[in-house]
Image (cartoon, rainbow, N blue to C red; front, side, top):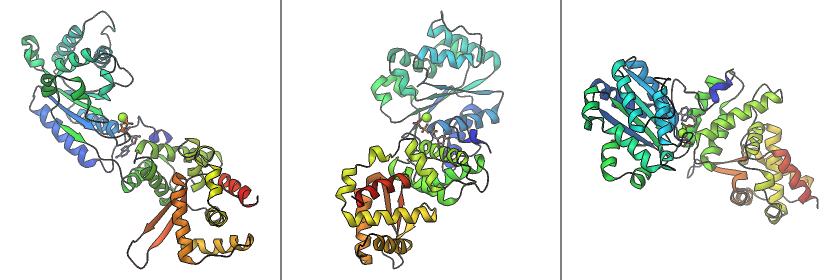
Length: 391
Ligand SMILES: Nc1ncnc2c1ncn2[C@@H]1O[C@H](COP(=O)(O)OP(=O)(O)OP(=O)(O)O)[C@@H](O)[C@H]1O
Ligand SMILES: [Mg+2]
């Protein structure tokens, strides 16, 4: 087992569903460094958790592996170091740790950086992760820094040093260059923009399967568990891969703590609760539950029973039937017909928000089926419902 491979600073060998982008970016920078051109930049844009950081680092490592010792990749997280001067010093210190953190001007730091690179006969690929944060407090300086990096050929002395500077920036949207850069800097700095789409449920499933294979013991998880996490994240968390991976890592920890040889759906529900994505005490208003009326509570109770007894993440309407009959009998309710039951299930899916998901598959076909899952801990939800039914 390698739990560290589910951490976010780990850069895996492959990036399922981002391999095309990886190849494209690799070719883009490879060609640039081969040509020994002066400057290029690529701006990665996308929502939280679409893989901007990991993709930029992966490409950075790929390029370094291919072109070492003639190209070095230097990563800096601008969210952590918001000061542009400090960010540049951090970048330079990766090449020469002896450069002082204080006392020099931006120009002087840049000057020694270029001279050192010249002596090393080395180009650089700089990753400015979350670049917009550089403008937060010191917009002017950030602009100067980008201007210098992109226009070394406009300074006679620097031009002779002949350094190739490639830059990858990441940001959640494309606003920052328009907000912070004048048109001249914008034109010389922004060379290419690459948008990363949100991950779909299928994308997340593939990513989770790959990361699980790398990190977890074979047999300690199954496709249904991964699908459950992918489904939840795609539906309620905008497909944020960070959240999907956190849920997997945390569910694995809970399984281990409970000495279970495999991750069960209830461990995932517990992880969703503990990471505060959906909590009964916050998201389940007893008023809402009460207003469902007795029969819908009975339906909900039978869903909980079915999921508990089968230990599954999903239950179909068909599989639910016997549990429903039994709970009706127990509480002296008359079981409804299938169409009415289906209607109740769908309404519950809407009324309960993030707590319960209802998915109708094979729409328009004869074999269509309704699949239900619950995203909060079953025991807790059951307790609340019982107290309402038995009132
Ligand atoms: N295609 C992928 N294959 C494997 N792991 C991935 C993939 N995409 C993202 N991940 C993983 O998902 C997590 C989130 O990705 P990452 O941190 O790169 O997102 P981000 O776009 O930088 O998000 P933020 O805007 O929040 O910084 C990381 O653990 C990353 O390794
Ligand atoms: Mg990031």
